[in-house]
Length: 293
Image (tube, rainbow, N blue to C red):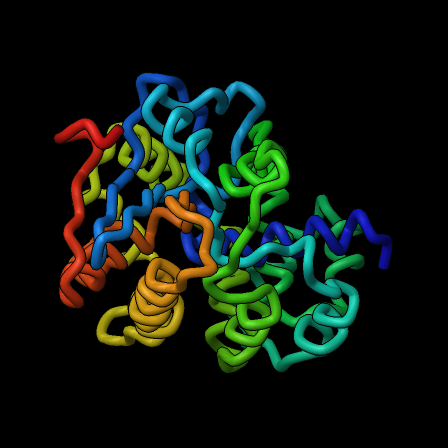
């Protein structure tokens, strides 16, 4: 597999925390989820990010750009540039899986006019196919993972340390851990996800409507009483990443303040990273309700 294609696949993996449906054209007037975190005498800034966008996504608001410029380190979920992507794809993203009749019909219908694209995907695990299919939809709308918030922040980081809350391998391993039925449901959602949901996520992210944003994202990751995706992709990771943030903030070797960017789905909702930090004694400030710089 070509290196450029592998890098593209990694960008797709990083989309899953927002279920691959949130992209927007940000402007200095946008107010995405953005918090100041104070914990045991240390300060960090937490931005709920979007993983797909356009060149005119930037610059973001003056407050976000200013606090990013003044930070001593950048923290992201996973820095794909530090991973052996080819090895990870071979280990977690390749292989056939039994497909149900309904999903096969949806996939066949989609592939009638995209035979070449579907043939290229056929050897990958369903979860990885779902990421590629989701990206194809966004590219058709003019969006690209190249302009995702974390990608852009890393590109303009000026050599400051880039720290990880997880790792690219962890994210590959997590997605590969779902059973065949769940993975094929991801494929079906990538194909059939309605434009209305995409527009709703975009609007909610841009205006900082955290309640609506959480409802949309959590709704897409739950199937009735089945909360498997929510538990593994959002809620448990919120606990683990918040613990990692506290660890980094207390580490004397961490350049501070840190500017942290994670998928917006982790920053909103009743079991968010923000609330998880509060449970452990952190003070959090919504930077749109009270100026943080």
